[in-house]
Length: 297
Image (cartoon, rainbow, N blue to C red; front, top):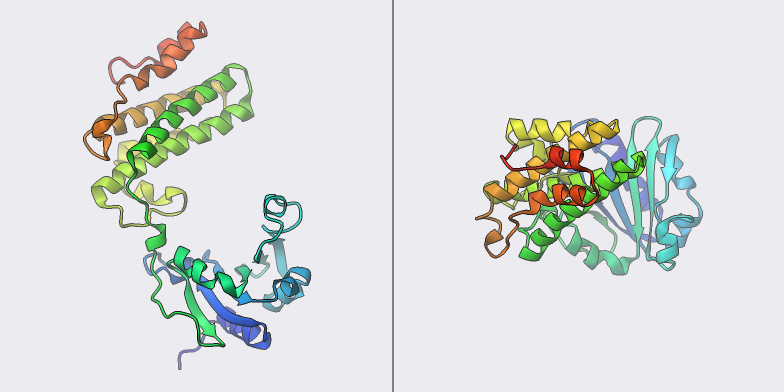
């Protein structure tokens, strides 16, 4: 018999020692064969029980797995969820141990089992005391991106330019932190469009990673370098430079894929002139000239 990893053995023991825990499941990167192993992989575990309060009120059980470095409770007091969903049927602990081990514990009502497995294709039953849980082979299908509908494309491109203008306004006002906030939102939409474009060529039946982090593996080197450079925004001037880079990348995606991604019924011609037109309206002629796109540069 193959010897279980120490952490998994401890999780088995914890599950078996608590009779109210009926099903022990796992999810996350440890079950995804497409992700290479490394020392940063967490343990994402889910325990199904009718006694959520037992674990919510007393978290001493967490010490069974080692000395804790940091514990956060996303469903706890003071968190957004506590105010919005006061009667949740689950509770979560995110635990970093001093040993380097990290375990994300979720406790859920048994009634959530079917819904949870419908939502997370990577979830896998480890132990089942009642023998009622469905048998399944985990995969990452739940994390594949979907081809965008026309309205999603329309929203994303308009949102790019809307947040672009917000960034300009905040930067002109000298509101550095706000400008950075809006710049991140602008970049997020550009990355979304770039990921859709890559997926349109390579296939949507892939997991492009958390926050599309795998995008860099498939971008042209020049585009990857530009996108990386857009994160250099440590001054008002550099924020403008980042915006100009993002405008160039966004326009390239629109121009190159106007015949793809269901663009046929959408017309985004002239959108690249929005920053220039906005700045002219605010009598910022020098900056408007900087953002003017007439030769594709």
